[in-house]
Length: 150
Image (cartoon, helix red, strand yellow):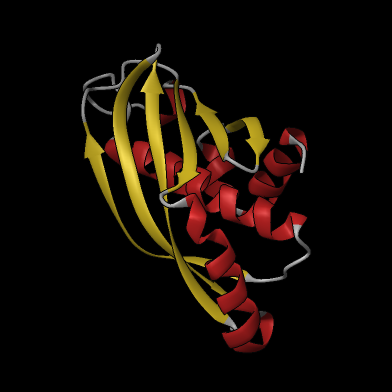
């Protein structure tokens, strides 16, 4: 999936991404990078609202799974089961979130379980950056459900 295709999909199906002015920087098998500006995500301290930082991390993580499964022709419903967010520094401007599988070697097991049982879990992380500096990290566990199990 190309970055512009993913961006259109997010804006059409996850309205929060449009409200946050999320753009897709890159998409590949290793990760998805999303970007958001400060203005629609600002808090009372003129930095990024924590919920926006968390949302961008979740969107990047979800997008990685969505694009990989889609590329493999696997139809599924993806939901987040749990996540933790670490806020290292205030974010005073545009920021990015780059997702990656916490354990890339588990992808095949995840995919096989999804195909065999109709349900599978996998851990995904996202590193948030501003001006080349790490400002936060999201760790999340996602569940994929095949349509007949959703």
